[in-house]
Length: 351
Ligand code: SF4
Image (cartoon, rainbow, N blue to C red; front, top):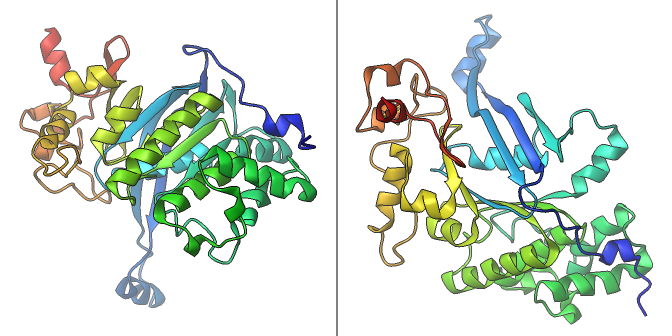
């Protein structure tokens, strides 16, 4: 009989859909200060004024995710979606706004409570090889954090890791091997096992299947969905692949240059995209061969986040841009129950 504590083996508690959000971001922003280039550093040495460039990677974003919900986060490269994911799990400090867990602000937790809380939120990264320490054996990669955080004892580690590997479809007898002795798909499973080992409730999956072959992607996506239902997990699923997002998500959030421009239930948003940016993204799906589902950037350069366009950031690429689009950013309004969009065309439609 196993001597692993029952708390370490128990499934996450069920939370009814529609209840208080499990995770909530309120008005969160993230600013990065861009490093000075060498000529600016030299100028600075000679007494020239210090010049800083600010990147607003995430700009006043609200996002609430209910327990057991799968939210897909989509946008072009550089739109801030990975930064938003890191903010959601607390891997980056906020520049503004607040994070809440079941309605309680996380910023006010005492250090011990914050560490305990942090275990409930994990991130699974894109490159399964880079995310695993090549000098550690799988038994330590997966089993180290549960021991460090007191979920299990060192004596229980091997049995516990075996259970985690079984859960993600890996042979536990391979736990003494190093990451390079596994295939890409197996390494992705090791990364998932490592995250699950600390019993998270909320996972941010950042392009977690993007580096895998198409056939392996499908297997790992099925694993994500099986785990979500078996462990009542909540996902923020970041992907550039609209097919993946459509397949796995209950709700989709579209980002453009640090802001959310549209969100809504997956089937509704894909059937009738509201925001011109979402419409352009979805229009590209059918043009891409051979899989006919991979997102490619829409026409026109995405502006630099160092100097985003005024007003609605999308206005230089938008075929419907009006004069006021250049002046003031449109608010993110609820245009139908559960459907949100930030576009002045919705005001025109209501008139
Ligand atoms: Fe286009 Fe104006 Fe709507 Fe922005 S607010 S998406 S520029 S119509």
